[in-house]
Image (cartoon, rainbow, N blue to C red; front, side, top):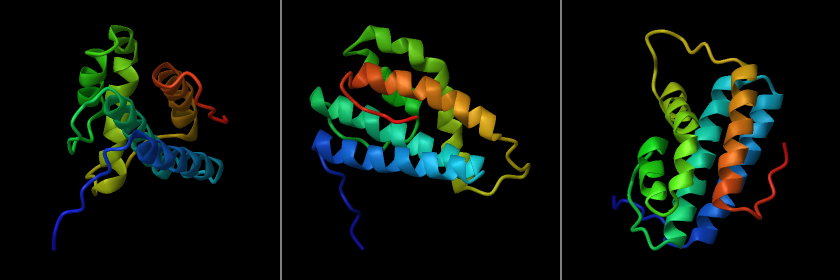
Length: 133
């Protein structure tokens, strides 16, 4: 089986980022903070990758938002203000993907708080992006 290659087109990444944002919203409304957290991470990952691809970055298989942010900061140093949200949300990928010894203690309120910070990050990457909260 060959490994699927990701698109190098930013618009493709934005399309999926928006779908993941919608999924996050639906799961949050449904009272599933772990699922919402996962799709929040997925959405931010794809938004940052779309931004980087627009800048000519070579696509890499990276899930850690803080690592992706390191690359983004090379293009706009002001993005470093989002380091804390990227570090926190990176952990959400692992919370939902892998069994944990200790169950997640994420709450809906945690994700709602992070969603606000995530929206600020997305607007900094794509100022015309319309995200419904």
